[in-house]
View 1 (tube, rainbow, N blue to C red):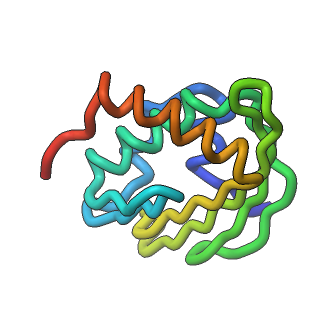
View 2 (cartoon, rainbow, N blue to C red):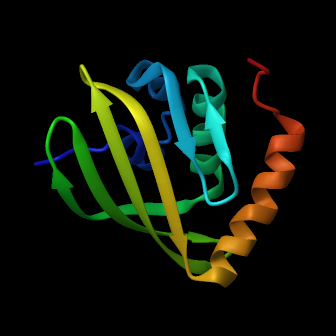
Length: 125
């Protein structure tokens, strides 16, 4: 079975493991913008995990280099569906792309993320 380090961290509420899974030069492409570097991506991914409620895996496809995982969650009681694309080199994540829908849920998530990023901004690299 294909695993997702990101989804596992969100599901378990264990953001500390995120940085260990990320390459130094990782790029996290969120629905809002791209974030570069391990420290920045780890912080933003951790905040996404705090924003999403009831994260549950649906399906996964892939191999050691590329994987796609679909999941469900909610934000402010609104149902949300997501897809995480993960690219790896030497078992370290080099690219993480997150897609979320529907738009109403995405807007609610983005609103929460703005507040969380204001409180805990990612480090400047």
